[in-house]
Image 1: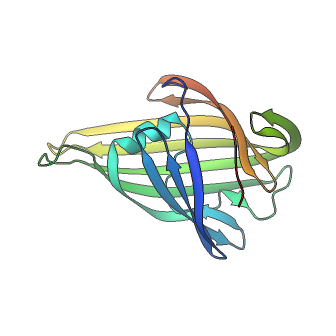
Image 2: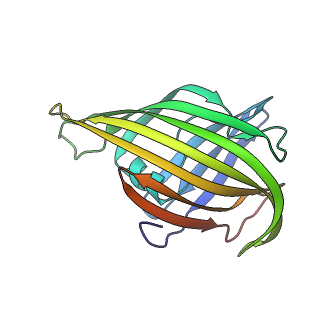
Length: 195
């Protein structure tokens, strides 16, 4: 990744018919995200930590709220050739030292998905028959500092993500461009436990 090697752990909890919670733990960042189960598929109700870039971005802001959530992250009837979208607006507060004035962040994340074929994928956690999904993301953020200065951050990413039935996300591989700086990374599932 652009930040070098790293590991993280996802813990799914509070599973119920209408949703579940995923807590992601990086070395210095812990983030909790609520998901909803809808007839059309599962929907993230905010921004998740799925790579080094999102981890670094989340660490700079607090008090995230999401609005105008549309589409799904994973459709109920996933099949090769299926295409779908997901988008949301985000608002947050710049993380600063106590007593310092904080700036504000607003942004929009838009994702398009296209399901490919089922492939055999081998990662440290094992070999899986997983469906390959191309994910293209455009993220546009505007940060207004406490002094009134504006900064715009634009990120474009293209990943292939492999999902295995009964397990979930087992691998992703892709690249991104944040304000003109490119990066590449691969993420693999090292281990998992389903209670």
